[in-house]
Length: 429
Image (cartoon, rainbow, N blue to C red; front, side, top):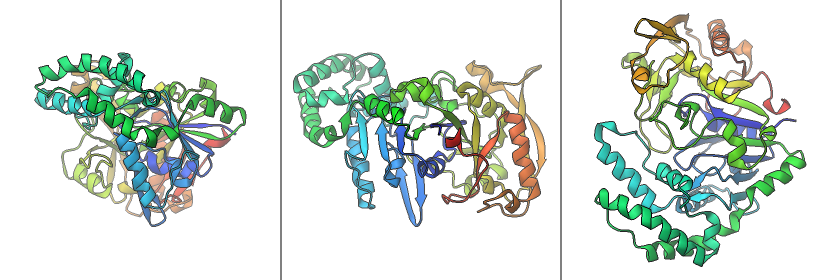
């Protein structure tokens, strides 16, 4: 049996929550390996809807779950989320959840900095969620972050806070933010420490034992490849690596343990926030996609920008992560369109491109080259075999496979967990 790493192959919001929830039935351990509570997953289990931001999706299934060191953790948000799912009948205990003791923390000062920077940037804003993710990653690589393990050592915690505030003091003065009360911050952290520390342990050791025991591990990525800090539409990206290669580093396992790489791909394209979007629609078709797909962010509630499927971007994203196959989601949203457009290349001045260039101006200037495909009037919603789908829908899927150079191994036809067509089980390798 293979382990599976799930990554988004667009700008996030591809429907990873449902796919991860479905796969977690087959997994024994579920691991979050990057991002923070800016990532939202909506899980529909029977008549219950769970909205998770930081917790691995496996907790809903009662599967042992791990928050790896590649994740930045807001401890207050974590405790709130544990309480929220607890009210829905899911008891998150230290036996169920492992929090990497070397994970970096998101603090209130990170949220302050995030919001102040966005406000100051005006029209040049990135479009962050304002939850402090970027500033927390900055402090992590700047070697001044407070980490989970520091909550157990008041003396070390004080030293960490002193170093951190030496840096943030100057930033806050430049942004007209009030000074941080270091003693109050230390007191607040020590107050929540007894609630957080029972979950803390060396995640890499826990996962090493799982790998050696041959347990099926699901590595759960957040956001999407096009938001990767290296490979995305920079600077309109998140602050972590969202590609499959990060699964190993962010969890604390060797690369060989990652296994089957599954890219999650929506049957059209959406993005939240600022940045280039070559196939974005501003017409009735775009409005229709947004309404039918209920395109609002799980975490932010912001309306997503909608557009036609961009095979160029997806092919590029899958290549960067070495994806073995894709899960295609929200096919049913396309029901009723007479014709569908798929981007197969870009024009940039006189040049025809088969990839998205790295330059910011070039990314904003590319124009999509479209191929027109036949739509279908019948419903695909709830389909669980190819026989349930209209012929034109099957042709659409097959054409996407050709253009993105990867097979569809899972096809999702509604938000319901069991409404899928399984072509190949990723856990079988």
